[in-house]
Structure formats: C-alpha cells, structure tokens
Length: 597
Image 1 (cartoon, rainbow, N blue to C red):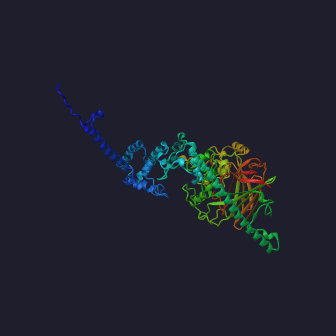
Image 2: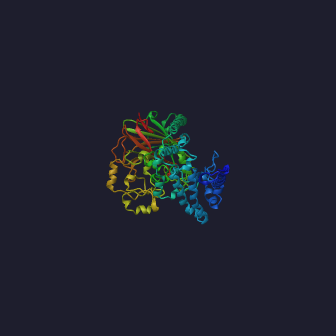
Image 3: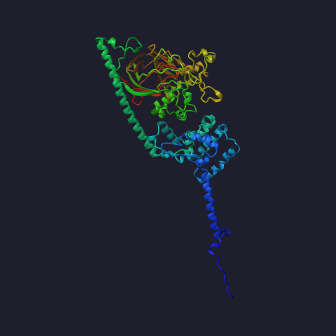
C-alpha cells in the first residue's frame, strides 16, 4: 500500500470549540478587548462631571444647587461628583442604572425639563425616584464613602450620635434623614403617607453596634462630663466675684448711712409679701445647677410632633429633648433668634435679642416649704420693632414662671412644660382671630380676652398635627366636655404654674389644663433683686397643698419641671424657655435637687 502523506494543520489553523481556529479566536479576543475597552471608556466618560452638566438642563439647575454644598467643596478637598451618588459601582447595577437613565434622556429629547420652570414642575417626581432607589439599596452609594460602622461618635454632635445609634438599632438608612444635601430639598412636598413609608425603619438594615462605636460613646461622655465640671467651676468663680462686688457695694452703703440697714435695700429690688428682703434659708446647703434657657421662636408641641422635626420619631417613643439637644441649647437659641435657622421658626426678628440665658438654679427645702433661687445676667434693652415703644410688656421688665407636674401629663416626662405650648396660641402662627374666638360656642367656657392661652392635650379630643388641606395646627376648638376636664383635674393631669411679675411685685399661683388659670393655687412668696447686672429671684412654696391644680411634693418621688423667663419687657411667646428637667427632694440624680436644710 502506498504511503499517504497527511499534512498537519498549522498552529493558527487548529480548530477549537465551535469550530473556530486559533487565529480566529485571537482576532476575536483582540477585537473584544478593543470593543470592551472602548465600551468601558465610553461608559466612564458618561460618569464625569463635565458630561453630566453637558446640557443646560443640568448645568443651570441641579449643578447650581450642588456647587455651594459640602459635597462640592470642603475642608478635606474630597469631592463627590454626580456619578458617586447616582451611579452604582457594581457592574450589573451600573448597567441597570444606565438603562434607566434613558428616561432622563427622553425627557431631554422631548423638552420636558428644558427650562427651570419645567424642571421644578417635575422635581418631586425625579427626587422620589432617587430616594426610592437609595432606600431599596440601603443607601449603597452613600456608603461607598460614609461607612456607618466606621463613624467616630467623639466627633459628632449629641443629636447626630443619637440618630446614628438609632439607625444601628432600628434599621434606618442614610436617605431617611439626609435628603436635600446636594440639591433643593422637596421633602416637604411628600404626603404624610409617602413620608412615613419612605422613612420607616427597615428591619433588614439593622446592624450590630460596633465595639469601636460603643467605646467612642464612653470616651466622649467622659470628656463632656469633664468639660461640664470645668465650666461649672468657672461659673461659680464668676458668681463669687459678682457676689463680692455686691457685698462690697452693700458694705459701702451701710458705712455711708452709719450702719442703717435701710440703706442696704437696693433701689432695683422688688419683693412681695411685706418688707422681707430674703427668706431665712442657708443657700450654701442647697442643690446647685446651671441650666441654659433658649429662645424657641414659634416651636410648639405640634411642631415637635410634626414632619419638620427630625427628632419626631425619637420623641414619640419616649426620648427626652435633652438626650439630643443638651450640648447645643445655646446654639439652637441663637439660630432661631437671628433667623438663621433652616427651620424658619422666627418670622418676627428682634435685633439684638439674645438667643439664650444661662441660669443658676438652687433648690432646698425644710419640713414645710420648697425654696427655689434663680440667678441670671440682665441684658441690654433690645426694642421689638413690631411694638410701639419697643416694649411688649412695659409694666414688667421681667417675669419668671415655672411648672411642675407628675407623669400623668403626657409628654411632660420628656418635654417638661413644652406640652402646654400650641401652634394656635396667642401670637403663634395659627392663632385664630379674636372675632372667631368671641363668636365661637366656647367663648362661654374659655377666657379669650388674651386669645388662646396655654392648654394641655388631655383636654382636647384631637390635636391637628399635619395641617392637611390647609387645616390650622392645634386644637383650641376641640374642647372636651366639662365632665372629662374635671376628671383630668381630679386625676392630676395638669401642670402646676407659679409666676413672679417684677412690675407688680406679685406671685401668681395657678395651673394649666383646659386653659391657663392664673389663680386658685396655694399662693407663695418671692423676693427679687437686680444687683450688679444680675437678677435674683427667690421663691417659697409650700410642699403640700389641697388646692385644685397644685402638685404636692413628696419625698421619694420625682416630678417634671420646666421654667421660662420673660426678660427685657417681653410677653407671650417671646420668652426664653428650658427643656424638661426633673425635680425631687434629696435626690442627687435629678437636675433640680432640693436638699434639706
């Protein structure tokens, strides 16, 4: 048989899977690399800031809103561009987003958003798309830069610490709180139902609190405690210096009068209850604390429970206001009184009005009486431009009021007397006109001479919190019947109110329930002086009382306490207020500890 010479195919001609040759495979591989490189380059080109603002719809609208924000320019120089927030890193999710982007391209082609007016018309719809995407991915793009587990609470404000701790425990995600951080915020345009659904915690996002975070919380609390102790020492030293000046002035006056005690009576003193200038109390034995009051503007209990208060959820579940705001009280007051607060809580600015007042409060008691002593610096007169003469209450340069209640009053345990302040009270945003009040069926039951006064939720069938369809916030016209209100009075669902007026040198003792009752209580005595630029008010009040609206203070019990100061001839809501504190007898765990003489 003849030999058959079979020629072997070259390496490049060898057949591979599906019949392709090595040469063909190499060609396809090279072409694939070139194609993929070109495709990927094109994709990355569409992720640049220049590309994103290549049309005037983006450049003239969202870009202009973005450049003033911290995501564009900040102290570290790290910029988050459009794609960092709007384009996922994982390839599959990136492709899905690019396909979805065709919707925006369609809007551009059809001129649906080619003017600012048209863009604003569709802004909420566009924002909701982004918010829903971020909610569904646990704010994935935010977490590319901001890792919740890596946060250090030592560099956060108390409010932020509280919110981030809640995020760990309840399953909140970044976009729940951080809307409108790079563009105009249209959160307010959501319905209440949409807002509740969008910002509700998701159990799938619950995280274990890292040990690093817990350790940071311990360190920052220790640091703040040390700073508070140091600040208190400095204030005590300052107070001692002021007292030394007062003593020196009194001694000088006594010497000039040949030792007559009548010369020691200060010209600016205002006392009630006869000629007594002080109670027989050793204040060195009293409990002592410094509490900062702040200017609240139009903030009301409805606002606290409403959609514009970031702490609404925490407050509703029982957290005290102080848990978030204790370290920023003065800052809050300054932002509101100056009109710089983004919450827009003061429409009537008073130039020069201070945002906060540091008050030293001392508390003591004997077998029969509670004694409270308030001291704070006076202020220069800042005329109210919307009042003739600049003084809202010309008769009273100062008024001081405090309230005491048990936990039977809802919200008192976390907000103190704030639960009595409503959005429809006199001088508040939803205060009804006097004609409406006097013409209502309630005019025979409530005293409307000064408009709607403070009242408690317990006396109303409903409080309007959402303001849907233009409804006024509050519940002045939802008064329960007389039997229900009497039941609340019998059940101690009221706030005991004591107020000192510097002009009339009088103490009013009443309570707040269906309205503000300025009489009927046990009464009390007060001594007030203005010396060396410092107001001092001492108040004596019986521990026990059988009068309607009075709270009897007993050993072993803790009471809710809040107070306010109308300084500089102010009235109505233009005062400074405290958050809710606790008062008790001989209890060093509360802020207002009345130590026995």
